Image (cartoon, rainbow, N blue to C red):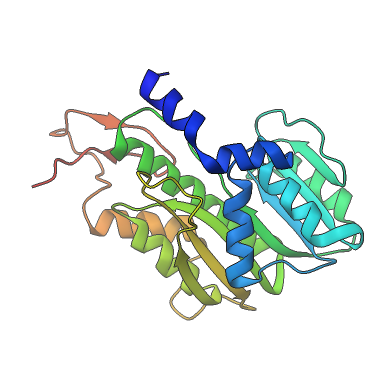
Length: 249
């Protein structure tokens, strides 16, 4: 951890505000600002928070749905309990995790799926952005399966190559899709949020079986994914099989 990062983090007004209000992370204000702009969460809603650790978005969700709603947080990392929420340790892509969610939900459906999920940063922008793209696409697929028709989905994305493929996949599955950067996001960060409202009954004509397939196809078309390319010296394995580092012109 650099001295510069520590000093900037210490001066961060959103971090100080979050601490004073009892939120576990400054990111809580990002969701609050998204809510103020788009009104994605209503009192009494059922919400799934994918990648909930450390719990800031889950805390905000509990406040917004009040006592008549239900909030479930899922993460691979252990997250301390949050009053008013159910926390599950697990992988959203695994059946065992989905079964736990189904047991809690019983016959209810989700009104909103949110995801502030981020990769464990390596410091290599191309790699971090590619892994983030995979995680956001995975969350989109999970959201479309779990959301009721008319439901809303929010996920974090990092601007970069391949993001347009994810945006197009979202537009095939939701009536309205917008990009929005809260003022609580760090100025130096390339992060923004994909706000997807009104889940469609079925994906629009021309969609593939999953967003993962569509984004993978998009990455192949723009030359980011290469198959059996022995000329590439440096590769990083991620969920889209093979992500090849391509030097910018």
